[in-house]
Length: 195
Length: 111
Image 1 (cartoon, helix red, strand yellow):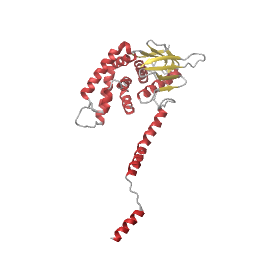
Image 2 (cartoon, helix red, strand yellow; image 1 turned 30 degrees about the vertical axis):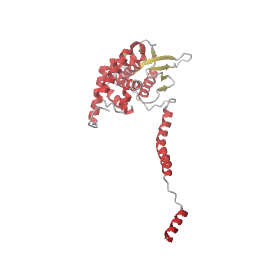
Image 3 (cartoon, chains in turn red, yellow; image 1 turned 90 degrees about the vertical axis):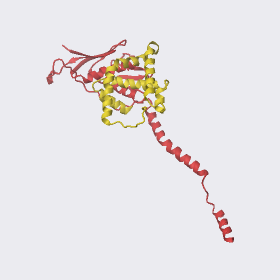
Image 4 (tube, chains in turn purple, cyan; image 1 turned 60 degrees about the horizontal axis):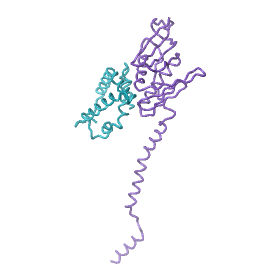
């Protein structure tokens, strides 16, 4: 008999199905060997998968939510899942099946559903009854988007102010510059001597 | 940014306390935060909620913030403040778990 655990948050529900690991004397109500998981979002198709899919999907949502908050264009791409922002309020999730000849599942979720999903994953991460690899958000940088451009812009912003300052200093100081003319100086000296 | 004539640097324990209060408040207010976020997804259906929230937000900013500051002016500009408000609400909605304190702290350092 398999154990079932549900984590709910408003419009999203995450169900974890699996067994305890008796080899390490776990309680019978714990789950360490996940056989299946289901993510239900109201008015959206059911998302389900096996243990090996859960961690990459959780990681994708965590990384995407981090990118969304930082001032980077939020794009996450992997073999299993792509998440992209349609606009400030709607996010495009593309779930690619590992089975051949299965079309990818495309979902459009709003900010409210996204935060519900993140909170379901948080509950799972914090649950003492399920033992999973903890999701740690790494410093993921999108392949596309403005991150590369941002770096260029940062370098540009770093170089341009001193460059403009030096140029303007040269232009302004050149108008007031006193050119030493030795011929004129000699004439002046000659005039003083004659006096 | 605040409407104050005294410049006081926040102490680390005060900063921590503020984060803890914010996390607890966002746990309590999550259903409301969610509804405000949702109202912007369906602009035609629920725009009343967003407009009410935005009006109250601007009212409070006018009341408590230094409106001569450029950063505050940006917050008051209804054409520009959408992104700031949405991101702030998203940060709050992502931090309602038991580890919300650590999450909010790291979000604030990245924001």
